[in-house]
Image 1 (cartoon, rainbow, N blue to C red):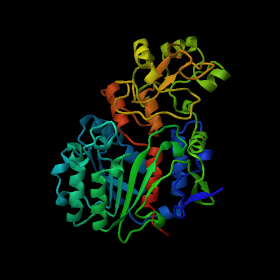
Image 2: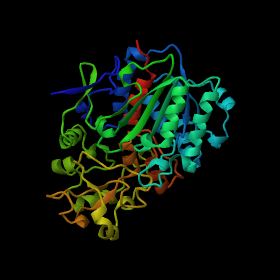
Image 3: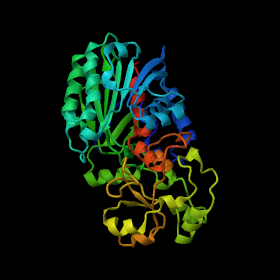
Image 4: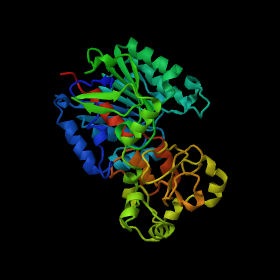
Length: 430
């Protein structure tokens, strides 16, 4: 079978083969520590200095968690975000409050003073989303990123490394064209990828665009990707130290193989049934079990789990919504291996904002079995955080309400995808 080889220097892009990602808790600190140990053992990660990093559009800290998971020897010199609630969450978890001023007011001298060698950016995605007005660079929310691009040629101490994350669609925008033009004229070489957590064994469909850039004379360990956009819908595997994917699979075969490589949704759930083997395997087996588990006081269900309420009735989907929007709902089960992307409007709206969990396993899945009998619920904020591969110790401050938590998570990124990319970006060729 023909293979499309993705050679990432001496270190595979993935910390381990996706096919072997059968861990009981993909987001647990134990799993994270194991991956970190694998990263740290890499000879290519041995550095003689500590990287100084600027983190733009820091949100709730997904990029910083990715940097930590990638085991990069780095310090965040400053983080920037204009959202005060996001900054509350960031400060609560990292003990540092991001700069909350307008990025557009920054000057080249301001940025030079940080003496940062790496910039990590996750600019607003709304100007480029399919659901939005698609004003691209004409959208006011794009202005701050355009300002950053404008400053790069003016810097006395420009960054050596640059990392940009955004939605699929950004790569065809005029903002993207401006970014590539600016980076090339400033001595950077770029490598671009479109990747989804599904390719990393996480049952979460959230494809995103990534740009990795290095300024001469720094170089990538795999220069074959220079000035290319790599979009591979197949699952990624490591073979003989190389990242490979099946090139000749048909689209449906690609999809089937991708889902097979993912662990089931149940491994990401905050609340699981322990009533019996069948129930434990498939989640909540019947309405009685659901009702009992939802109404019992739950040990350990505190802020560490991303939600302070012990009343799971908060997460039940009302019958009125099911009757009105049932045909538009995406329903998943504990043994499903795919979950739709959670947007910032999850819990506020049903259509197109993320999957709902059926807590009753019907004999026949899908909408042939009455939805009102499947006891649908929203995924909890902790569960959404799990799908984003945020660490177990990530928490929200008490004052952040439920809708705010969902909104902040919807604007976050996938640590499972970004950490390996940062590891690759910060790796120097041997």
